[in-house]
Length: 136
Image (cartoon, rainbow, N blue to C red; front, side, top):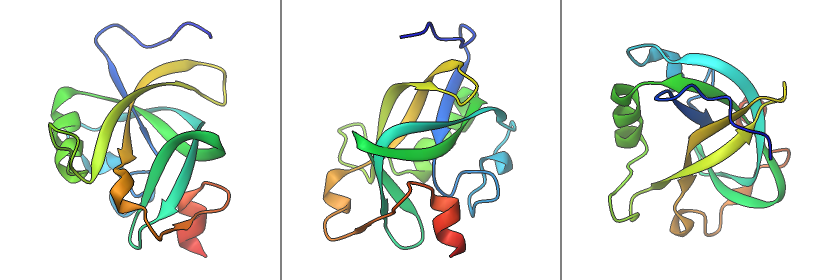
């Protein structure tokens, strides 16, 4: 696997749902403003939870998203938004994933994976792109 191009001390997040550019919770609204560094896809399955999606990592599917450089203040705000719990019982579980961008760069990213209990009976989003799906 290629070496990560992340700058030491800089954190990145891979967003795939309402936090994407133009989404209802566009990450650009947070302060200090996150910096978009790449577009990417990761292995996963995207589920329609109504007003937003949830992703389960791994498998054969691909999920479209964006990579942003963020600071600790934005990360804390994202943890609150995604209802992350210290014991992994929240709505989302924070994971680390090495993400390769469409341009070939790699980033060690925070990814918010939906808690498995939240996807029971939910439809899979074909194509793995929340923005395209929500525009239909």
